[in-house]
Length: 394
Image (spheres, rainbow, N blue to C red):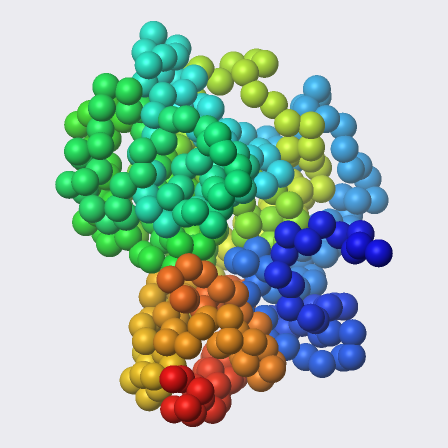
């Protein structure tokens, strides 16, 4: 008899029953420190009282009406995102991949409205990840994502991440935009340097291209600023968000300048569930917390504390941990043994982490962690590093 669930996930053999703050509890009552956060989703931890109250209150009043009617929560949340970003307008979706594709459609529509429909291609980066839809996997060079799904969607040119010269050489009269993750998540926690991000803006201005930032994973406070690109002092024309925006409730958003979105008129795009009242209420509460005075400063401080501790572990256990990557509370450890083995051993020590490409273990804790939880995580990592024998590393 086959399993009822389609076997597309390599799941760990543990089922969690409840969560509280930065901790998860399995069916046997064992407690785990969650440094995965549902892959950067539960940004405020589990069962955050403000989010629970917002969802419960909204659920008691109204769940869904569709976008045939005004939704007050959309108008309020969009205005707040605009106030705290480069953008002039927002479209809400249910997921990051939907937000990314909405951004892609917006860019193509912009050039079509200008009478330049031939400008439809987007330059993306090696090891990038923008979702699992057919268009999103077509925008990457990762065989593990594309194998078996040919023919892929046409319209993407992949260049090396961080290489402006190669990127400039890829620009043609058909190029419409450059799409980059300021910090690649699935691609191995690879952070774009400030000069590269500034260079992207300059290239787009020079060639009349759209700059499209994918902050699905690195946005919403994870680096110690609301958006990761803000460290470079540049602004995109389009940006997609998801994950931490809903604190665990499914939501995505594409933000854009008025000029970029000039072709997005009534009927040009839509969503049945996107921007529903439940998602809006929770995301509004998430934003309340992120914008509290000092909150993001504390994320930056605690991220620096964790990063320094990881660097010490690399120095102490160089045969297990090779390199620290990332920023804020979006960090990665490049490992010497297979990252899957490291993750399994960390889980046995009560620490939940996530894999990434290039043999990296991702550390994506809730933004609410304290020094005590950092110390607890570093202790678990230290025990795993010390427990690997030379024989096991052969």
